Length: 175
Ligand SMILES: [Zn+2]
Image (cartoon, rainbow, N blue to C red; front, top):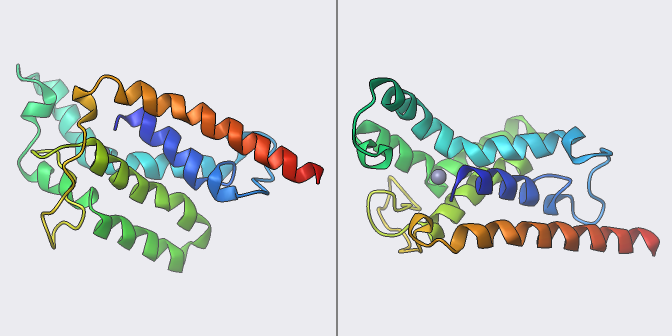
């Protein structure tokens, strides 16, 4: 998916203000004061940041004529596959569980990113190889860049989740 969807879903699912906070939510008054929101956004963006931001900067400076997603490849494609693998995501979360427990839940946004890409990319260069480098198997999903309805639909689902969460917590507090 696109960066906005990854950031917002990361925070919505893996922060205390979001679903990971369950009924109690976060003690922070506003969402932007809750550190887990920012960590979840960062982890939700990391797979694309680590694999694409440097080649994108090079591409912008050198200015090749072809489209970035066609230009992208070589060793960076291997990096892309490694960081878009559940193996890598699980390793990162596993290490954080041991050494920095408060970051464990926000770090699951990385895994969420991989799963979201797995269903929103099809067979081809950008297919998500879920167990790379051990296997090159992946789901033949619906490529979001070729399905104009998918992106707005994923955004529209977010306020529905936020409203439901707000309503659930409000009800819980009353009883
Ligand atoms: Zn990605």
